[in-house]
Length: 162
Image (cartoon, rainbow, N blue to C red; front, side):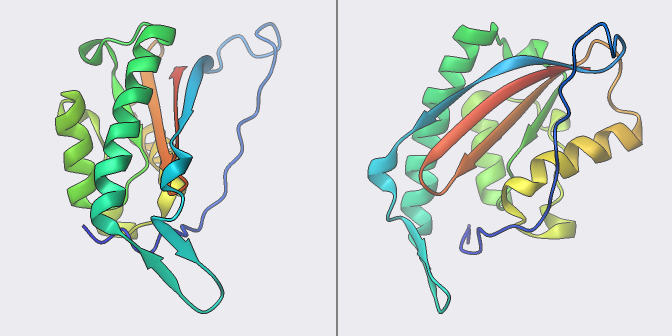
Protein backbone atom coordinates (compact mmCIF):
# COMPACT_ATOMS: atom_id res chain seq x y z
CA UNK A 1 0.00 0.00 0.00
CA UNK A 2 2.91 2.35 0.50
CA UNK A 3 2.73 4.73 -2.41
CA UNK A 4 5.12 7.09 -0.71
CA UNK A 5 7.86 7.32 -3.29
CA UNK A 6 5.95 8.76 -6.22
CA UNK A 7 8.87 10.26 -8.07
CA UNK A 8 9.42 7.60 -10.71
CA UNK A 9 12.37 7.85 -13.03
CA UNK A 10 11.92 7.19 -16.71
CA UNK A 11 11.59 8.97 -20.00
CA UNK A 12 9.46 8.47 -23.07
CA UNK A 13 8.14 10.35 -26.04
CA UNK A 14 5.15 9.88 -28.29
CA UNK A 15 5.85 10.66 -31.91
CA UNK A 16 2.72 11.79 -33.73
CA UNK A 17 2.53 11.72 -37.50
CA UNK A 18 0.00 12.03 -40.28
CA UNK A 19 -1.53 8.69 -41.29
CA UNK A 20 -0.32 8.93 -44.88
CA UNK A 21 3.31 9.13 -43.65
CA UNK A 22 3.07 6.12 -41.33
CA UNK A 23 0.11 3.99 -42.47
CA UNK A 24 1.07 0.94 -40.36
CA UNK A 25 1.89 2.78 -37.13
CA UNK A 26 -0.30 2.51 -34.01
CA UNK A 27 -3.06 5.15 -33.87
CA UNK A 28 -3.77 7.46 -30.95
CA UNK A 29 -7.58 7.52 -30.70
CA UNK A 30 -7.88 10.19 -28.04
CA UNK A 31 -8.09 10.60 -24.32
CA UNK A 32 -9.71 12.27 -21.35
CA UNK A 33 -8.34 14.04 -18.28
CA UNK A 34 -9.96 14.91 -14.97
CA UNK A 35 -8.66 16.55 -11.81
CA UNK A 36 -9.55 16.61 -8.13
CA UNK A 37 -7.14 19.30 -7.01
CA UNK A 38 -8.84 19.68 -3.64
CA UNK A 39 -6.64 16.68 -2.69
CA UNK A 40 -3.36 18.36 -3.66
CA UNK A 41 -1.98 18.09 -0.12
CA UNK A 42 -2.20 14.28 0.06
CA UNK A 43 1.34 14.03 -1.28
CA UNK A 44 3.82 16.81 -0.59
CA UNK A 45 7.55 16.97 -0.83
CA UNK A 46 10.60 19.16 -0.94
CA UNK A 47 14.35 18.53 -1.10
CA UNK A 48 14.45 17.24 2.47
CA UNK A 49 11.27 15.28 2.97
CA UNK A 50 8.15 13.77 1.43
CA UNK A 51 4.86 13.21 3.23
CA UNK A 52 2.05 11.10 1.77
CA UNK A 53 -1.34 10.15 3.18
CA UNK A 54 -1.35 6.75 1.44
CA UNK A 55 -4.80 5.71 2.63
CA UNK A 56 -6.58 8.84 1.43
CA UNK A 57 -4.51 8.90 -1.75
CA UNK A 58 -5.79 5.42 -2.60
CA UNK A 59 -9.41 6.25 -1.66
CA UNK A 60 -9.63 9.59 -3.46
CA UNK A 61 -7.46 8.41 -6.35
CA UNK A 62 -9.87 5.54 -7.03
CA UNK A 63 -12.82 7.94 -6.92
CA UNK A 64 -11.15 10.19 -9.48
CA UNK A 65 -10.09 7.21 -11.61
CA UNK A 66 -13.71 5.97 -11.58
CA UNK A 67 -14.96 9.34 -12.83
CA UNK A 68 -12.23 9.48 -15.49
CA UNK A 69 -12.95 5.91 -16.60
CA UNK A 70 -16.61 6.85 -17.00
CA UNK A 71 -15.61 9.83 -19.15
CA UNK A 72 -13.37 7.54 -21.26
CA UNK A 73 -16.27 5.13 -21.72
CA UNK A 74 -18.38 7.97 -23.09
CA UNK A 75 -15.71 9.69 -25.17
CA UNK A 76 -14.00 6.59 -26.56
CA UNK A 77 -16.82 4.04 -26.43
CA UNK A 78 -14.91 1.83 -24.00
CA UNK A 79 -16.35 -1.54 -23.02
CA UNK A 80 -13.91 -3.26 -20.66
CA UNK A 81 -14.10 -6.67 -22.34
CA UNK A 82 -13.44 -5.12 -25.78
CA UNK A 83 -10.09 -3.61 -24.77
CA UNK A 84 -7.12 -5.92 -25.33
CA UNK A 85 -4.56 -4.51 -22.87
CA UNK A 86 -4.63 -2.09 -19.95
CA UNK A 87 -1.36 -0.24 -19.43
CA UNK A 88 -1.65 1.42 -16.05
CA UNK A 89 0.37 3.68 -13.79
CA UNK A 90 1.51 1.11 -11.23
CA UNK A 91 2.28 2.09 -7.67
CA UNK A 92 1.97 -1.16 -5.76
CA UNK A 93 0.12 -4.46 -5.73
CA UNK A 94 -2.59 -3.02 -3.46
CA UNK A 95 -3.24 -0.08 -5.80
CA UNK A 96 -3.10 -2.19 -8.96
CA UNK A 97 -5.49 -4.82 -7.58
CA UNK A 98 -7.91 -2.12 -6.38
CA UNK A 99 -7.86 -0.59 -9.87
CA UNK A 100 -8.44 -3.96 -11.58
CA UNK A 101 -11.32 -4.77 -9.23
CA UNK A 102 -12.95 -1.32 -9.50
CA UNK A 103 -13.24 -1.56 -13.30
CA UNK A 104 -13.76 -5.30 -13.71
CA UNK A 105 -10.57 -5.74 -15.73
CA UNK A 106 -9.28 -9.23 -16.48
CA UNK A 107 -5.95 -9.33 -14.56
CA UNK A 108 -4.35 -11.14 -17.52
CA UNK A 109 -4.76 -7.91 -19.50
CA UNK A 110 -2.63 -5.93 -17.01
CA UNK A 111 1.11 -6.52 -17.19
CA UNK A 112 2.67 -5.60 -13.86
CA UNK A 113 6.27 -4.48 -13.38
CA UNK A 114 6.36 -3.10 -9.83
CA UNK A 115 7.80 -6.36 -8.48
CA UNK A 116 10.77 -5.93 -10.82
CA UNK A 117 11.09 -2.13 -10.95
CA UNK A 118 9.29 -0.89 -7.83
CA UNK A 119 7.14 2.22 -7.88
CA UNK A 120 8.40 4.08 -10.91
CA UNK A 121 5.28 6.20 -11.06
CA UNK A 122 3.85 7.19 -14.42
CA UNK A 123 7.05 5.97 -16.12
CA UNK A 124 5.50 2.51 -15.81
CA UNK A 125 3.07 3.34 -18.65
CA UNK A 126 5.61 3.67 -21.49
CA UNK A 127 7.84 0.95 -20.00
CA UNK A 128 4.97 -1.58 -19.90
CA UNK A 129 3.87 -0.58 -23.41
CA UNK A 130 7.42 -1.21 -24.64
CA UNK A 131 7.62 -4.58 -22.85
CA UNK A 132 4.27 -5.68 -24.31
CA UNK A 133 5.58 -4.87 -27.79
CA UNK A 134 8.85 -6.74 -27.16
CA UNK A 135 6.91 -9.80 -25.94
CA UNK A 136 4.69 -9.83 -29.03
CA UNK A 137 1.53 -9.24 -26.99
CA UNK A 138 0.44 -6.32 -29.18
CA UNK A 139 -1.12 -7.27 -32.51
CA UNK A 140 -2.41 -5.04 -35.28
CA UNK A 141 -5.86 -3.77 -34.35
CA UNK A 142 -5.45 -4.34 -30.59
CA UNK A 143 -7.08 -1.65 -28.47
CA UNK A 144 -4.77 -0.55 -25.67
CA UNK A 145 -5.99 1.58 -22.76
CA UNK A 146 -3.36 3.86 -21.22
CA UNK A 147 -4.29 4.87 -17.67
CA UNK A 148 -2.36 7.26 -15.44
CA UNK A 149 -2.97 9.12 -12.22
CA UNK A 150 -0.88 11.68 -10.38
CA UNK A 151 -0.68 12.80 -6.80
CA UNK A 152 -2.24 16.22 -7.54
CA UNK A 153 -4.86 14.53 -8.03
CA UNK A 154 -4.93 14.38 -11.81
CA UNK A 155 -5.95 11.46 -13.99
CA UNK A 156 -5.62 10.82 -17.73
CA UNK A 157 -6.86 7.89 -19.78
CA UNK A 158 -6.28 7.38 -23.48
CA UNK A 159 -6.48 4.72 -26.17
CA UNK A 160 -4.00 3.56 -28.78
CA UNK A 161 -5.06 1.15 -31.52
CA UNK A 162 -2.10 -1.00 -32.41
